[in-house]
Image 1: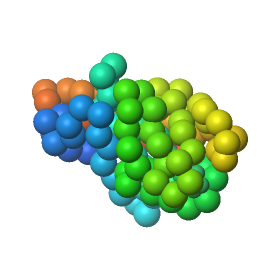
Image 2: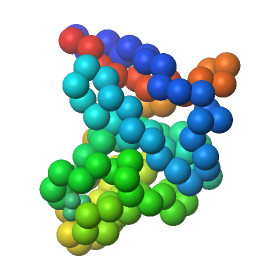
Image 3: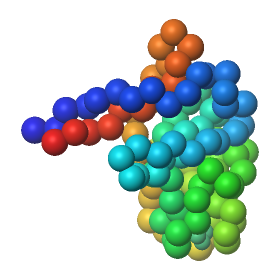
Length: 107
Ligand code: FES
């Protein structure tokens, strides 16, 4: 059974609105976003090739990949058009006492 474990990412003030940072945990890369509707987390790499999404641009709830300008809807991970066609994996995020936490499944 998989259990969700919460991991501290950063202080909420460390990510400006409409910005994204990278979070590395146990050799895996995640992208942590601050959008107008709140904080979200997805896989750190684009599903098209290997670009790091934290180097992309956030427009509202959209992340634009820095390599070929593919776009994803951040809250759902949905691919929003060519060249990306595979959705991003998303992860739960919560903010507690000013800290951004990511929930990752543990075996
Ligand atoms: Fe992201 Fe190509 S690597 S759109």
